[in-house]
Length: 375
Image (cartoon, rainbow, N blue to C red; front, top):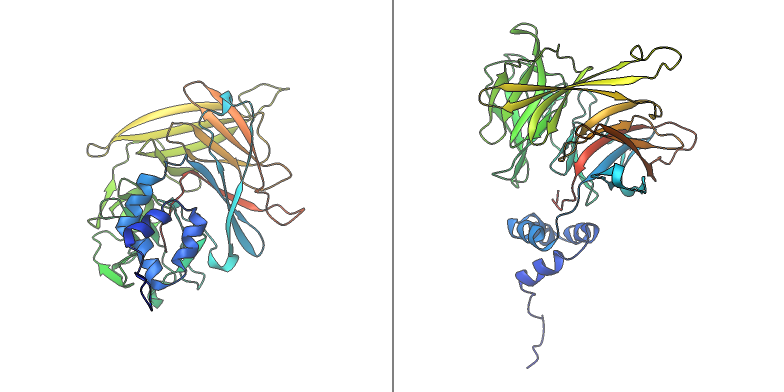
């Protein structure tokens, strides 16, 4: 029997099943259709169903290319064993673009989201999801315009939090929890005033970053912030390196915190070769409770390297990745496998940017996975 007037609504479980089979771009368009559609994507039921019905995507490299007036985001497959692959050329897929005034600096890739703190620029912080092409501007107190902020993630509560550390005993530490439906900053008292000296790296719900305070401790220490319980402590880093943000970098090494320091040296090989080599030192935090560190040291002959490169991270399988810092006619990333002592280069096509004859700054992130988080 046919029913006159409005038809029966589609059951929510059928909507969820249909959505879980769509591409991320189609899912994003659905979420923008109405507030009701957006609430479906933000629900835990959809997220869990998406992870079950969709096969786990292989990790990718994410590239943020900074042009004069905009920033373009691309990604390409992340080769797990590039030296066994006969085709060392891969294509990059375009995700989205942002006006340059939305983000002057990038503070890492945090569980699928990019964070632009916009410290001291007069602009509010911005978060974006490259998979869905969405972005959002965050509210900010006027007193926080010149304070550095970081993004962390609580994997148990499945919540993102923006943290603004206290740099003075006159100012409290500020926290903004995202995804709660109510955007409001909270203040907590921090026992140790400090200022972030690097971007953060979030591992297993702990946000690590380098911090300094010339009045309370000397040099630079590693701050550890538990995102779920909102507690802060400092590591007694027992590593023979002077922490300097320009020389050292915090990375995720197979699920553990790692301090990476590198040095270019062209004095090792005698003339007339004069090959440059890259010396790498890694201090891995093997036991966080006991604060036990393990040192690793590598020397990479990089005669195959083109242009300026930087160490951008370590893959989940333990390969150290180097990437070119600027676009050119050809753009390369390099995979160093410590176990096999191999260094292979892979050409990335399609991420050169839109400005011809100009060199654009490129920021590269490892282990990027497709995510449908709806901002």
